[in-house]
Length: 330
Image (cartoon, rainbow, N blue to C red; front, side, top):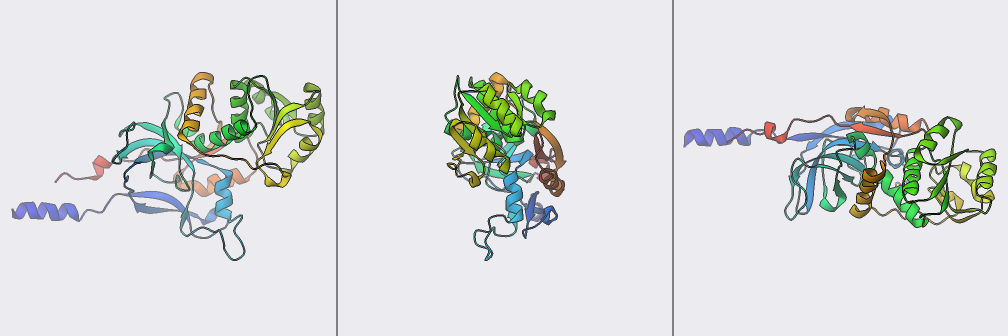
């Protein structure tokens, strides 16, 4: 009995498993990001715990870290320390009560509100889908939010078979996903990009044009009767001349400065599942240009801040020790 009490006491004194997560405790440059240790989260009813393998870095993460949109009095700001990251892929290792369709060991991808820069997280089961084996961890971690934004934009623009669509910023991460979706749906895509990216756009099925005045004239020649839709996937000032000079039945921009309807980008399991289906049928991918370990999140943010480039930046979480090895048997 005494030995049992001793063994139980020793077991209870073991520290609880902890996981690394990236946080910031003030707004500022990438240097405000730091990795800390947090208690291992536990999946509540309806939730799934995922050991993260990859997390996409998005412009919205940079905006949040920088404090863009926060008033002088701090209104609308974050509570510190604050976490980051809205898309991820990983392996299920705990399933909460009432969850069906997922079990430990399943490879999944999904989205979460400001928490995916971490070794583990918990999310409602409806924010996950199974990751196809044909998709790498980096791509799976970079697609969920970016892909759903592209999908929502094209649905809002009512893009379908036989339509002609101009995508401004077509070689960027969001733009190239939009190109692939539109082509898969049977639309004709004219994509604006720098000359160095024209061959790449052709491989996606788009007709490339320069992202300048000459490109506008070329697009007008390709579609003399106008186009069904204009989509600004870059959110920069360069879209204004396209809006003024290319006749379009519908237009949408990431930026509010053009006076267009706001993008309604609701996340849903059904939307993400459709992206996975397009990947399986048509090879939909988001290009990944750079990968960084989780602890080098500041470098990843600097890579995004260098400006528009083809592909996503992704944080990689190298496979952690299984929880079973962190526990001692009683």
